[in-house]
Length: 174
Image (tube, rainbow, N blue to C red; front, side):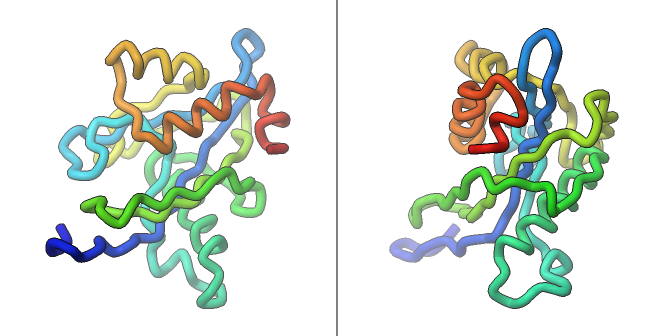
């Protein structure tokens, strides 16, 4: 926690919204559930992601924050869900910066991409992540409204945006 009157530092982070088209129900997003014992967003359902590490900056210029975030998103998807993604296939989706009064601040790039295969095998890490599911955005929001799952505001807003798209191709054009 920062001292009174001081801002918490902004920690660079990245998230990837992995999407697939489902023949019966439209667009689905890969959601992972964070370990409930974690200090930050414990128990929440989120998209794979996390902080940008020094290794994510390797080979990039010092001012290439988006490039480092792309690398972090790919790395986090592999670590948390066993999903292999191509950094060049990620589409910028949004960027979130919490207000200065937040006790922990992650300046997070959100990227979206199509799942490399419709039957993508997801393997959760069992440490930071305890569960996963492919969810239609509207269903995830309804489950949150019913108190079945927790969603952070950036996740909820991202899901709300995705409800406007009938296909992954359409979602990735925005």
